[in-house]
Every structure is written in C-alpha cells, then in structure tokens.
Length: 78
Image 1 (cartoon, helix red, strand yellow):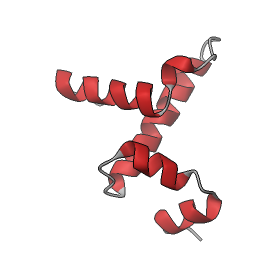
Image 2 (spheres, helix red, strand yellow; image 1 turned 180 degrees about the horizontal axis):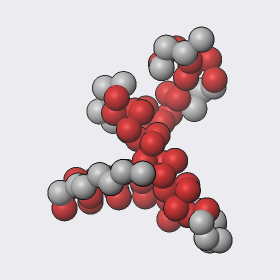
Image 3 (cartoon, one colour; image 1 turned 120 degrees about the horizontal axis):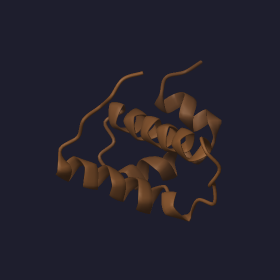
C-alpha cells in the first residue's frame, strides 16, 4: 500500500469532487471497512479520469456513465 500526500488546497478540491460529484456524503454505507473501500474506489476513479486528461470530473463521470462500450473506448480496452 502507498500513501499520497496532498497540499491543503488539493485535499479540499478532492473532498469537494468526491462529495459533490460522487455524492459521497449521501452514501448510506456505514459498516467498516466498506466506507474506506468505497473511498479508495472513488479516488481510483478520479485518478483514471485525470490520467485521461479530463479537467471536469462531473463531465467525465457523466460521459463514463453511458455504458461499458464508452469506458472501453475511453481507456482503450479490448
């Protein structure tokens, strides 16, 4: 496992994106360790979007929600 350190402004930006775009605080998952697992999955998703040069995470999430074929095209999967 590895740790990534963010500056305070980056941490606020990541929290904002996870909260607003991915509705993290609306999640009803409360049983340990599921909240941590889902937070890692959300962070992984954001990193995939950033790796594909998306600037707007909400736009990236909407685009990727169209289906598996769209995801395959975006991430060049077969």
